[in-house]
Image 1 (tube, one colour):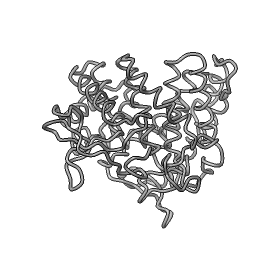
Image 2 (cartoon, one colour):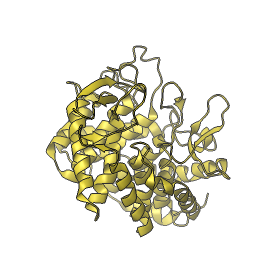
Image 3 (cartoon, one colour):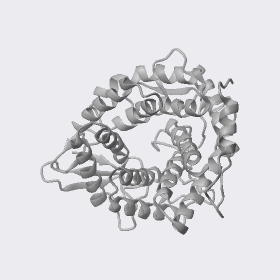
Image 4 (tube, one colour):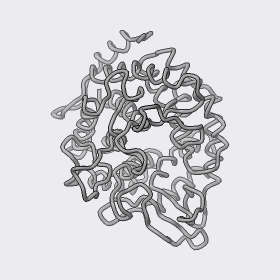
Length: 395
């Protein structure tokens, strides 16, 4: 494990002072150690995928082998995005080279229109690349990605269609789609067409109207009639039941509306994010370590899998929500985020070096029929993002 600026990085962290008062805090050493571990562990990941043009997704529990996916899989932006987060903190040139290699593989996705996942694919990867390098090639890819994503906007709803019409759904819109709006908002605010922002806000408004129950939990899938805009079905594809609160789905909503407030300063988005946060944090079935069960309404709790990816996602979202909050409310968001991050960094969830296929975190749940109690690449991504956010905002 080699770092070109390890000492400078560590000293910079130690010199930072905390603005938190009577709250539980993470130390600079905690942040540093987790990024140092990530650098080391992702070198293992790199060796495991050497010679392939596919991106790491998980580990197959049946044979213990790395599960990799081709470039149009919705998660392919998370590996290069994680590499950029690690490089930002460690200046490891080998990590940067791998990030650049993988960006070249997924770059054709800027023209992909097969589903709504351009934000996951391209903003998490090329967005971080452009932020750190200023290379206009990366910016151009983001602009083209926004154009491609906008082709899935359906004015009659109005919202972005998530998946194509199939035997089950006519025009499905999933709560995950809130995450892809950042690509549109960012492009609009960085010299792109204002239409992209208009699409994002209309989608957010439609989702706010139709996806949420009175307790501010969210359905996973809303199916629409594209002509009338009427709701045809309220279903799930990944949760326990159609009416249950799938944990990661609640995280997508929390993160999405917090992010939309950042870009628009529309207070209804901030209020929605706070309502979702209250649903999650005050839920009687949120475990004491704050890492959710895969679905809040699974009748078999506590004998069901956890979802570290939901925990990482929610922690990252809460850190931003705290930026827009004050007093006890802010303290509540920060305290819970810190607990989640400490849990994820503990041996209960963080893998030992060289194990877990090279992934950082264990015990995530993706699609319940195929990804149960496994590592998932987006769990790592949002954990790294949460570490960076805490360092930037609260140390």
